[in-house]
Structure formats: C-alpha cells, structure tokens
Amino acid sequence: MPCLECGFERTEEGKSCAVCGAATSSGTIPFEQAPTVPQDEATPPRKRRGAGLEAGGVFAERYEILASIGRGGMGSVYRVRDMRDEAERALKVLHATAEDDAAAVRFRREIEILSRLEHPGIVRIHDWGVVGERMYFIAELIDGEDLRLLLRRRGVIAPDEVARIGADVAAALGAAHAHGVVHRDVKPHNIMIRKDGRVTLLDFGVARGAGIDMHTVTATGVIVGTPEYMPPEQFMGQRVDARSDVYSLGIVLYELLAGGVPFRADTPVALGMEHQNTLPAPIRTQRPNVPAWLERIVLRCLEKDPRSRYADATEVAAELRRPRTTGDRRARVLATGDQVIEDDAESTPWALTLVTADERTGWTIDMALQFEGRFYRLADVRSAGKSWFYRFSHWPDEQILRKVIDYEQDAAERTASRGLRGKLKNWLS
Image (cartoon, rainbow, N blue to C red):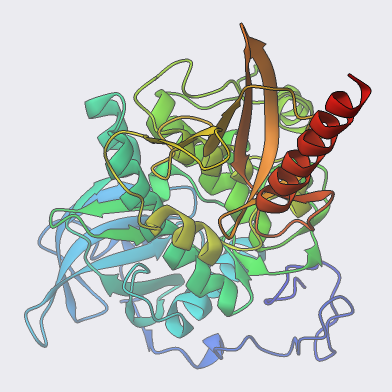
C-alpha cells in the first residue's frame, strides 16, 4: 500500500514506512471512520453513481447541489448549500471509488493536509466522508476566478499586482512549508483570485512531506505535477522540498509578467531537459516596465540548483513585500570627488554606480564593496572618456562575503598614496 505521508508505494500494512517512518495502519485521519451515507440498493448502479450530483439534488442528505463548478484530474467540484446553516460551500467528490487505492490515497492526503493547515491563503475544509462508494469533502466556497482565467483575459499582469499576488501565494506556501508540506503542483490553475482581491491556494492532492526522495513518474507512467511548472529535481526524481515550490512559483510569476512560461517543448521529456539545461530569457527585454528588482527575484526562484534559490516561500514573500522607494535615482558627489548614483527602488539592474576619475586598480568583478554600511557586489566595469564607471548590485544576504573593500578606507589609502607620490615627485624635481 502507499504511505499516506510520503507516498512510498511498497509499505506493508500495520508497519512503519521504511522511508519516512510514518505509521501505515491508518492515515492521520482515520478515513475508515468517516460517516457513510448508504444509497438505496434498489437504485440501478449507473444512476446510483451520479445520484444527488445533479442541480437540485441532495448529496449526503445535507448538501443541496446548486451548480457544477468544474472538473479536475481527481474529482468534480460543485457549488452546494448546506441545509443545516444555509451557507454556500464547495463540494469536491472523487471521480474514483473509495476502493481505488491510488486515487483514494491522494484524496485522503488532500483532506488530511487541508484539515491541519490554517492560513487565510489556504482553502478551509468543513466536512468529509463517504457516500456509497464515493469519497468527498466540503470546503469554503471561493468566489472569484483562477489565475489561468485572469491571465487569458488580461494577457499580462501589471508588475505591482504580480508582486502582490506572488507575495500572497508565497505566504500560503510558507505556511505549508512550516508544517513540512510541499505542494508540488503550484500553477495558475490552483491559485484563486477572489472578487475582493484576496488570493487562495488550492489543490493539495499531490502534496507530500518535504525532503523525501520522490519518483516523478508513478508506476502507471503518469507524471505527478504539471511539467510546465515542475523544477528540474522533480523531473529527475530527486529530493523535493520547499525550494521546489519556490521554483514553480517562479514559473508562475514569470508567466504573469512575460505572458508565457519560460520553457516549452513537445514532450514532457524534452520539457524536462529545458528546465534542467536552458536559462530563462530575461523578462525586461520583453517588458521594459518590469522593475529590475522584481525580475531579480523571479530569476533567483528559477535557479537550476535548489541551493541558489530562496530557502522557502516565506523568504520570497518577505522579499516581494520589502518596501522600495519610488522616484528618480539619487546622484551626489562625495568628498572624495567620486560621483555616486543610488537606486534603492531598483528600477535598473544597478543598486549603486560609482563614477571615478581614475581606474580603481585591485577592484575585480564579484568583489564586495562596503559603502555607507551596506555591501554591494561589483558586477560591471567600463570606461568612457576620462571617467570610470563601477556598477554594483546588492550583495545577496545568504552568500559569504569575499574580497571585501571598504570604500572609505580604500579612498583614504589612495589619497595617502597620491600625496606620497606628489612629495616624491617634488623631491626628484
């Protein structure tokens, strides 16, 4: 049987999972104890399977079917009215029967995860059970549209709105990551935008525990997840964790800004090779109005090596919500005679530009510059006429500083050196 916690397929009934150690006699929710509503045995089987799921019908002797909302890979979703309190909610019914082991395990996992995750950006679950042979759960009704429909309707999304949506999704993912849950299927279809603008993350049906070695392809050969949004390690069947969801979120943000996903191919295998080996095209070459700081966040999410991404989605949310100044870049002349141009709003790729009258020998690409209490990475050097331009990006917080040059100390040493050379020249003359 499959382990309900990590999905390992060869777990023995009554024994602990050999991969994650979880007990397997039952899931964290004892589904066998779910309330069961028997169907009329005289009803023909074909009619019984759909009984109560037509508009006007009553499901589980409690929920009046108002309308069909949609149909997904695991189940169908309906708008229902709870006859106990008259509230409108969403009913999700598994396509397969409760005896279909693979589908039932995924459905149980979604119920178990949603029942213990409490966050305003994650759909709340109210009830669950079995009717006849059909598993179901009742969740809050989300009044709005998914991000896929929004993107189709508008083409691309404004950068400030992308940052807000991305931060809300990242915060919801961060709550899941804090409970050791990896979503594994972050995509526009699973992100709902409510009419009041709030963002809700849906569909934890393929979510699993973090840090487990997962096989991307199941025994039936069906890819778990959506290839356009899957990280390289998921394609290769390697360990997945919070950083895998960060990558998928990066694909979503890229698509919202650029109007399309960064990688396309005719087959899942070819698409997997694109994710593993091809760098995404810069966003700002397609949409110049996208701020450099937003592009930088998205491209860091899309790093091939998980170690180069944000550690989890909470970091992504914090970075997207970090206040940034607006207005033009500030330029000023320092006491040393150098000109400095600062761009705290990160409207350009350069957070700091130093314009000097002489070449800074000893300054090399990727070195760290300490300037007025902050650290910057030297990313570009060029000269024009009698001026030298040294352009810096912010030093990544998670990286160790190397070859640090303190601007004030370096300037003092250069002034002293020029004074000594002047004295020597006067003495020789």
